[in-house]
Length: 454
Image 1 (tube, one colour):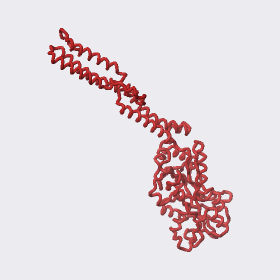
Image 2 (cartoon, helix red, strand yellow):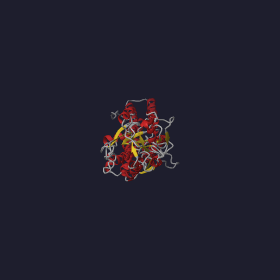
Image 3 (cartoon, rainbow, N blue to C red):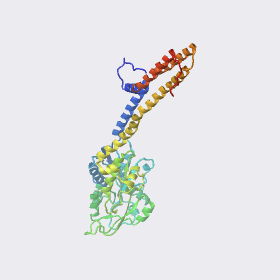
Image 4 (cartoon, rainbow, N blue to C red):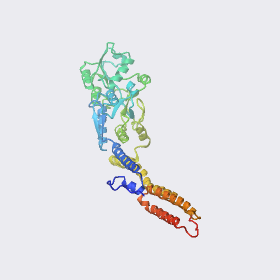
């Protein structure tokens, strides 16, 4: 049995060498491999933790997008997550930011549209959260029936970066109105456009909740001389423009006492999607969907109770995490435990339990494996020794006896070359004792032969 070199101080892998008879390189590899996997497990434990802060790109202050973002932030704060709100000009700018990886943005409100950016995007949708009606206010002594009648007028189509502007341009183009005719298209924000319409310096204003506040739109609805355009061709627009929905404001639903509007008003509008980047943590995806259910789940003017949020795929595929949420809800840990505690327990289960499941059986198996290995090596030499002793029982010439002593020495030499763990020293010294016994027999052969043990 080889002894470890006492000239060197103990090393991390010395116990493995002494107790299991491992080669120093193998023992060192096992130690550093174990350390590596432990460090990797600890790293994964912290790396897999959900962020405590995420950023949403919303809309202009006062818009429905901005208002929704504020409500989301309050709900997420109850679970210890901070939602930073980044104002924008509206849906188009939100989409630009989400596609721009240099922007620190995780989630945003985006209107369904035929935008070419969606085709090559890896963004995902958590859900559709609401209808977004397009409201067109205009000043005219008589109702306007067709959008084409706005040709030659002064029209505010919303600021660049807003979904309002994108949809306004698409609808005006369908009616033959563009930038090359007498129509003056102005990129005014909602407040400036409303003020200009009330003063008479503007004829038509396109507005949607992504860039205009409900207060501004309501003030125009109640202003004398300002009319709300009734989409008499709503069915045709919905058939022609696939991402639009037909909506309706019932007569008197805005103010029953003043009967506003005085008749049913047909509108069109896209759906709003809650869009995220693909690497959003699943736990945060669940929190956002819970917030969406709380904010958008009730009955409103343009939707029934429970209609939203809904996993409707339009511009972007539904996130796998969202699909799982709609199918089976939150994971069981997050249902019964606070968010921070559920996250901690889940990470422990995912990170450390697999390590223990692999390590414990392995540690328990190592002694048995090495005992089997050492026993196999020693038994192999016992077989050689038994064979030699059996041959020695026959009458031997001095030459034969000398040859057997050489073979016995070879068995002993191979025994000394074995790396035998200290825990199996009894087997080692037992074999050495039996070697000495056979050597003594060869030196002084017995008078009468005896049968060897089997």
